[in-house]
Image 1 (tube, rainbow, N blue to C red):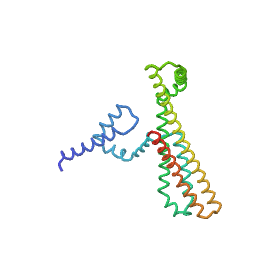
Image 2 (tube, rainbow, N blue to C red):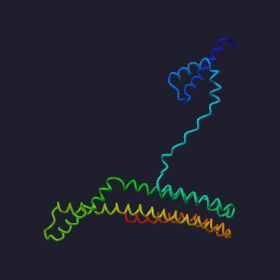
Image 3 (spheres, rainbow, N blue to C red):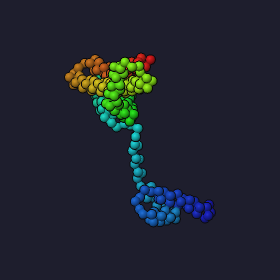
Image 4 (cartoon, rainbow, N blue to C red):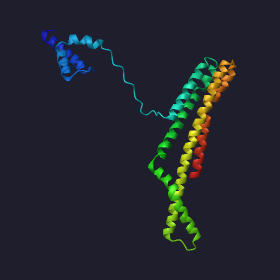
Length: 251
């Protein structure tokens, strides 16, 4: 290997070290950074040990913007933590039933989050200005429509096309308002069902701890575990019933 080849390798390595020096996240001025970058091309053997000895910067935590952080999410997280603690405390007490019900526990957690998503979707929907206008109509416009309807009923004169159109608009407005109220009631039902299920699971979790420390037989723990696992049926049945009811009314 002649001198030219050696010099070429030296410069190439120096250029790579210079790039690394330039990209080092140090709080230095532009002039000092440029000086270090240029000098690293020639004196890279002096910079290389410093670069290798520098600890790698810890990776920044990934910000999960898609994970909601609200009151419902906090309640679910609390119940999940309490449930995990209770199941871990069984410590071989009822391994068979735990293994058998693992898929139902996963379904239960998924059902909680799915129910919470439905509530959030309805909240966002009902916050739209168009639904606020519907509420305003109920307070102001509804009284006027009722007055027009009563006047038409008391009058013996035949209704004109204009008057019929006004009555049709008033009927549509009342039907629309009723639909909005059904959406609000549906949201409240979803929230009540989710809250009730979470409260029931928290109650059963405390019973697991109580059974463990009072010397209850393993069958009691298995019974409680099964009850928790079957809590999903409450959410599933309510959702299925509400879906069937809504579909029947839309026909």
